[in-house]
Image (cartoon, rainbow over all chains, first blue to last red; front, top):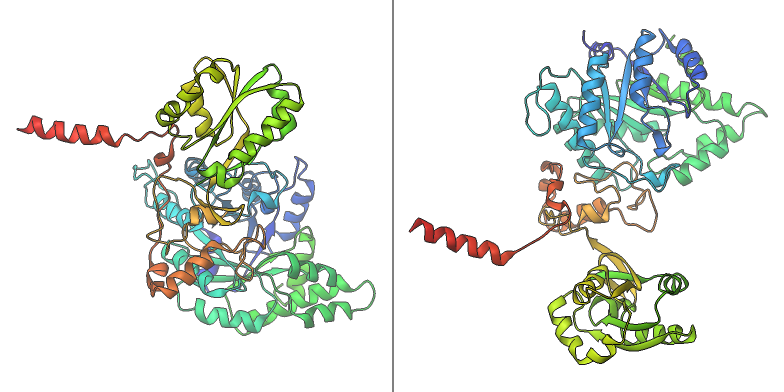
Length: 295
Length: 230
């Protein structure tokens, strides 16, 4: 059976994926509750891999739980914590568990996380990992050994349209396409006009692009993102819009902004879908989708 | 050169506490430039040891501390002082310390420095790491800027998403290696190459420890092989 996420993208449908961050600890009750809310509404659940280098439940285990719920998981794989043997072994394992989508990235540095003394691995990086996945899909491991049974992944990568300077980032995007990336998920974008310019470039390549959206909870959060997260730039007018909201309505305004952006991305056919990173507010995703006219 | 930093002095005095007669061995190369193993530092440590009631039998700045044979010859002039020494403190890098272990198989040898990295002196007493000794140089493909060393993730195919105003996500003080490479390749008119070449994952077997190189042996084998052919 092939990836339903892939089929949705290839059918030309405006696709929605939601991010699920595995918890730190074995209590997954909130995660299960969020998955129930998202079931039947989003096309896939993108499960992060120790995001921000903070140690949590592994992406693979949560992807299996997503599958057991009858939903479609996207396995995020970073190169920070495993060498080429570990990565390939986990990819083979993911395939036999029925996971069909993998998102390849290099991964935040250990210094960003909660185990700063850990040894960063980076035996391979995102472009090379995409090649590894392509190889496994073609029945060969990284050393060229024949596999008894190939994998069946639909592989994607990430891109930061707002990286400064943009030129080296765009060349890397091209390398990822050449290495086999079939879909891209972007870092959070807030400036749709600027994103349109990126899409003019991205549309030259045979890949699907999901715009990354992070829900703004407050003006403070927007300022924090601008100051601390490379590649994210929240325009001042959006910050003013949230600041100007009635007391207690900041989050609602943030959700309205996200819904407005989704609506525009879809109506103007700017990209192929959105990836909503709710960061702890997964229960708000269906509300935003409804506001955007997707439900 | 090998960049070294002085170990905490209190800890050094503690760890060598069981010995009483010390010989201090510096190095005229990297350690002198780093201010960790020149004559000045020898005099300084001598004073500290003497202040804590120890005897310093002598001190010497070796020409090249990592060259054990040469250092051994240089040290012959200090035979009497060394015979009267129970601990040699080496004020260079880890390699220099191990030269001394080789020269003095029966004596205690302690390092006064921590060896940090292979780098360049950018200004007086300021050092930057430049080479990871990975065993498989890629500088020919990256415009002469080393991504294995200058990128904290050692990425070989372009910047990660963490570049901000040309700097690294880890610290605004680190210029992004791949922005530097891009700029260099641009200036050299090699941008096309930058976009089209995907560097394969490195063969880390080239840096499995302990590494050894014997150029002499290779030459001998080669000529030996030719002789056999004849």
